[in-house]
Amino acid sequence: MAAAARSAEVKELTKTIDYSVKHPLQNTWTLWFDNPGKKANAQSWADNLKEIISVDTVEDFWSTFNNIAKVNHLGPSSNYHLFKQGIRPEWEDESNAEGGKFGIQFPKNKAGEAINDYWMYLLLAVIGEQLATDEEICGAVISVRKSFYRIALWVKTSDDEEKIEKIRQVLNLADDIPIEFTAHGEAEVKAEEVVKAEEVVKAEA
Ligand code: MGP
View 1 (cartoon, rainbow, N blue to C red):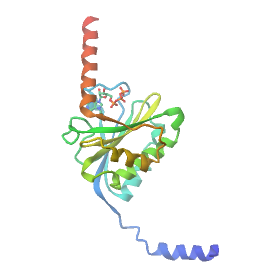
View 2 (cartoon, protein in one colour; view 1 turned 120 degrees about the horizontal axis):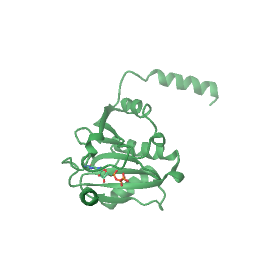
View 3 (cartoon, protein in one colour; view 1 turned 45 degrees about the vertical axis):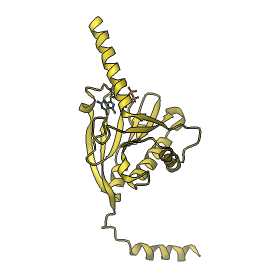
View 4 (cartoon, helix red, strand yellow; view 1 turned 90 degrees about the horizontal axis):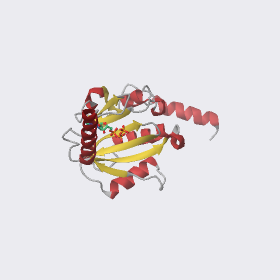
């Protein structure tokens, strides 16, 4: 088809699009941000957590995503969290208590700006309900650390292989990049041990 005819056809098609209609998502999703500015600790962690906005349409998701700082522009120790409305992005929330996260680590020097796309693809899969059963997904987190980024999918219960494959597929992730599951219970125990060790050091000083 000649270019002029094609452009007329596109014009005709777009006439039928009603831009005032928003497209609802299956769930409402809340964006959170935290940047403790230093290594976080389990007791003060929630103080840094800020609820930014909730979105329930495709259009509102994009206007949020396009207007917040890109992941590669965030400072070390920052995190974005996109969680189902009603679930706080912390281990203590009852929806997370028995669950865990699938984490993928990307060295900063290798990932570069591609991290923005990995994060976007994970979010699209989450809000588009492409991963596991809808009920099972709690949210997604991107963590910026000194030398790496970590993307994580928080789930309510299990670490089955099927989810790992699905994540690999939606991110188009190379086979040599591992996806690791950590139960939140393990992370919590580790954080408590750190707090105890710090108290011992303080007491001895
Ligand atoms: P992290 O950011 O999940 O781990 O938790 P990371 O990136 O491996 O650790 P970092 O030290 O390199 O940043 C970091 C710390 O934040 C934990 O050790 C806890 O002290 C605190 N923390 C993180 N999360 C997700 C929670 C949470 O859900 N609840 C509480 N109470 N503390 C948390």
